[in-house]
Length: 183
Image (cartoon, rainbow, N blue to C red; front, top):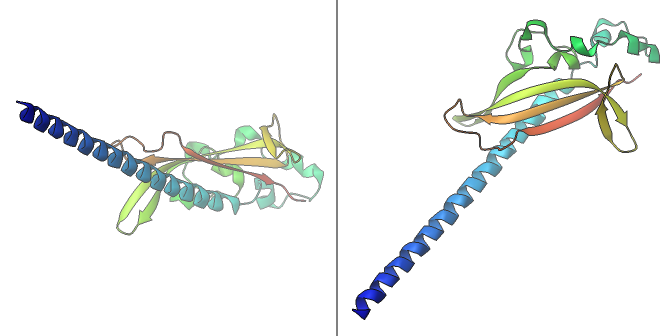
């Protein structure tokens, strides 16, 4: 009888140990996958920011109406005119809209691929552009109530599995940059 009890105890301990190892391994795999997806999302965010940052500060710069003085502030687009009318997608993201200055990207919601050989992971990208007041001493940007010589571009990236899976990232990756008008 004692022998059967010890055999059962050994079996229970072995199964418990095996389950613990499997649970640890599954947790480790999920954490590794999370870090990989996070790294890909950061890469997509940086790539998207690179696309946006190559554009002119404002439509007035594109049109050539600026004078290179503080008076240019009056020529800049109003914040409520940011974005593309009709919510068309920018050409840089495969759409038809010509986005030639920073604020044209406001409100863009696109799917961007991260290609890995024959596999592709898709990321939902949301862009926000706004005027900000910039405090150089603290490095902080606060939303402005009117036009300023500073625009903040915020890129939010979330993994998108087309409804098949819930996202691995609990919150979107966010990358923001402040661009200054140089005169």
